[in-house]
Length: 257
Image (cartoon, rainbow, N blue to C red; front, side, top):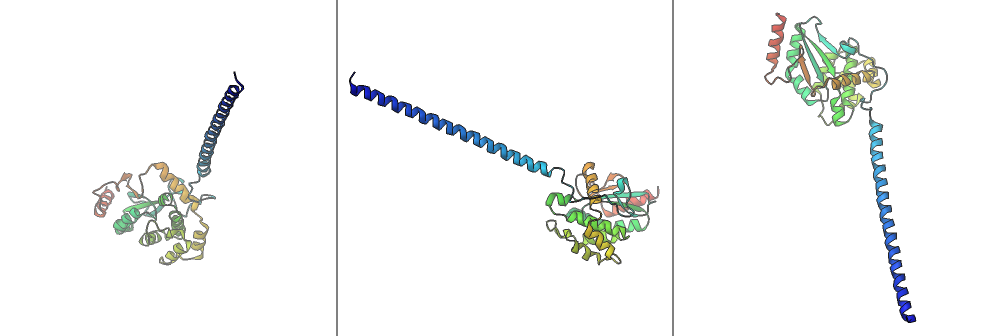
């Protein structure tokens, strides 16, 4: 074999070896990229899991500290704010959120009838406060308004302040009740409520943990939403035929035995 042919074969072998080395290097880089992407994916997933874990159990409405029930609260764990004669034969249980538009609609429609029946001693109402809209929309207005209502309960002014909050309810997306100044300003519409004691109670969030406890009871109860309204244990809000006149008739009939 001539020297020229041997040189040509050697060059071909070298070129083939070089090509194989290039292929190995490319394969090595490809595997490195795959592993790197996998690591990034795992780290990303870990970050997401970390965020979820970090936030788990923090849906407490921003409440902390001891559970302080407002004066006169009753029922299990003292979570109900009572209005009306305790001896009335009919009990209306209302789960409500001061930011909830449907709750306002219920109050606007039934307010005068409920007042008439409670004033006559025929009906007692148990108001149970919820922070559903805070959870759904974000913000703290549901909790802070509920705390302020509990502060009004301490002063014996809950029914009047309750009505004022609904009559001045902001749009659902406007978290105006998150401002203590707004809640205190509304207290001026209720005779005798705007005191330093009330203001301090509102600013300190004295009953925040109690509100969170009430909301927890609502969640565990499996209620469909707010308002959830029961007359002597029967869901009347789900009754499409219910009207203020029908509610009055039912309460009056029950009072007669």
